[in-house]
Each structure stands twice: as structure tokens, then as C-alpha cells.
Length: 489
Image 1: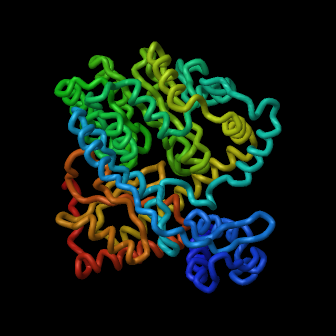
Image 2: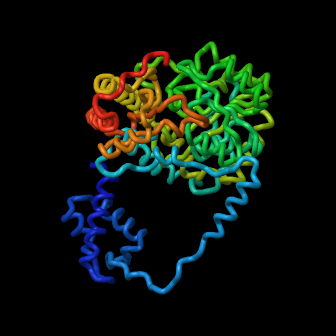
Image 3: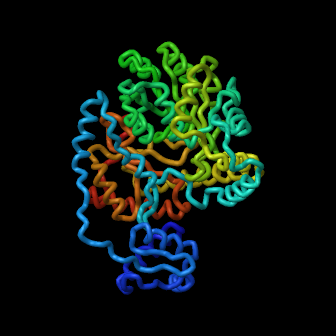
């Protein structure tokens, strides 16, 4: 059982048993709970911490855990209704309201209930994360001289150099800023490049977290369709002409959610179109270290082929390591770099030095390349298992492209299928999916779902999850389901 599931189940059990104790009554010792429930001491500690956060339990160091006293009555709740007026007034005054729908992001961050297969995940399963290497790197980093001191605001020079070597071309360490993960880097880039109210061109479909960033900054996302070869240059040029936008955000390698790779023929076209429009290209290179074992060598980043400073490059190590290794980077050339640096300093000051030192220890250790090879092998195996199971059990879900990198498959639902109903039925059947709607900033052309194969335990769980999804589809469609979507539709 996953540690997370064990904690949730123990928390539920203890919560139900609290009525057996009077307020102030002492709960069994941690050792007794370990023996009774056959869980680890860490699981017991985390379950008690959750109950403490809920106000149901209090802990006394050296004495144990006790049922909390009920809150004193008679105090009337505060009145927050005034906020509705204030917030709505702000939205009316703002030409582009900055209300943010984070549901598309939260669906990949929220842990599903115990027993639910996690096809909605956005990170590697715990078994694929290099936990031992991370722990060793963090321990070594803590012993480095000055490890807890203040780092340079731009980041440690050695780490900037390491990221620069991964980009190539004319990018050097002086062009790199260390950021607190890819999401933070994207936020800095959009705030630096576009004023509130401005249009920003985005791929369609695209990563919901980026759309949330744009809307929170008061920007207007404008969709530019992608196909199997990436963004369509003729539509990108037309969008620049129609909107006057000065920013285009893209994922040229294993695009989220389609898995598309920007073709060799389109790469120079995208840069030329942006340069002629006087616009920046924000390159979100999130999946470069998620290449599958059978993939050809990936193309270099767009930033490597850009001598004119058109590209602002964003990268991160989070996806290939752990959700908690929030270390990423921004790379840019020219005056824009100073603006990026200024905004990042105002927002975060700097990335904590221990994390930067641990990252250097991690990527410099022999275990790093072994980890990358393991991930490449596992992702290929899981991708093939999921694709085969879908084609066998769910042929009505159109799978038009099998990527050679990344961690998910993008599936079109049959015409007329109810996306929300399918997601609800799937959750009842014990499988969590990511809905397609949040990936579009305008009306989607059809219903879609995204299935991640990185956040599950392995091939057996993938096969079981597709079987559960088959049952959910039968429930929604009342039988074997509609006919598959024909190619080209």
C-alpha cells in the first residue's frame, strides 16, 4: 500500500474512534498504534499530525496525544460578505478580470482517495522517483561550506552553468537564472513580457497551469491550434497579425497534452514569424528529460537556434525527480534578462541554497544517469502497456498519436460523449482521469481526456485501470459505447 493511502486510512480510523475518548483523554501510544494497525511509525506520526491540524487532537511532547477539548461556544462567526462586493468591484474595474480557475491544475495535484488508480497524475510515481539519490544529495549538500548561507540572487554559478550546457548554442551561464520550479519560471516570464490586458498566443490545447498564470496576470490567452507536428505556422502568423500579440508560449518537445514534437521544418518558421512580429517565444521545455527508451535523439531547444534573443527558455528538474524538488531555470539573451531577474527577485528573492546545492550533488552523481535511463525504460513500457490496453478494451476512444516522450496519452471522446459524466463515472469505478476541457482557452472542438502513465505503480495497475474505465464507459453510454471517431475527424 502506498504510504499516502496508509496515512489516509489510519487518519479515518482514528477519527472514528475519537468518540471513545472523553475530551482531554489520552490516546494509545504511537507504539501501540503501530502494532494495532501494522503501519510504520512515520504513518502514525503523519495521521496524528492531520488530526491535530483538524483541531481534533492535541499532542504534548514527551506525554503523547490527547483528544482535543471542544471549542468554546458563544462566539459568533465573522461576516465576510463584504468581500464579495469588493472583489466584484475589482473585477469590473479591470479590463481583463483576473479571476483564476485552478481546477485544471488541481486535478493533477490532488491525491485521489485510497484505492483509486491515479491516471490524472502530473508527476512520477514514488517508485520512479530517485528518493535514495535525493536523500544522499541533500545530506551531502548540507555539509557543503556555506550551504545555509544566502545564495546569489541569480543562482549558484555552477548550477547555472550546468543548465546552460543542457541548452547549448550561444546560451551561457550568464544567460541563466535559477527559478523555484517551472511554474514559477513561467509566471516570471509572462509578467515580464506582457502588460495586463495584453493578448498572449498559446497552443491549443495547452497546459492548464500556463492558462491559469496568464489569466491571473490579467492577460488574454489566444489559441493557436497544434497538430502532430506542433503549432501550425500559418495560423501562428495570422494570430500575430490579428491580435498584435508580443508573446507566444509553446512546448516544442512532447507538448502537453498532445505529445507533439515541433517538426524540423516548422522550427525556423516559428522563430522567423515571431521575430518579424517583434514578439518573444516562451519555450516551456518541461519534458526534455522524459524521453522514452525507443525515441530518436530529441531536437535541441529552440533557444539553441536563436541568436537574436527571441526565445525565453524555461526548464525544470521537477518532472523527472520529485514534486518537492522545485528547481528550474529561465534563460534569455539581451535586455529582457534584466527584467526577468528584477521580477524574480521581487517575487521570491532567491531559490533556497540547500535546494540548489542538493541539485548540484544530484546531477553530478553517477546515480543521475542511471536514474534517467530507468525512467526512459519505464515510461516506454508503461506507454506501450496503456496504449495496447486502450486499443483492446476502449477502441472508441481515439488515440491519434503515441508520443516518444512525456508521461501521458491524449484521447478524443466519441462525438456527443459527455466528458463530465465520464469523469464522474470513472471516479466511481475507481480511476481518476484529467478532463480535457481545461486544456482549451476557447471552446474545445470535442470532448477529451488525458491519461497519465507516470503516476501509477506499474503495468498491472495500468491494465486494471483501463478495465475499470471500460466499466465507466459502459455505465455512461449504456453498453459497448458509440462508434470510434474516424481518422481525420
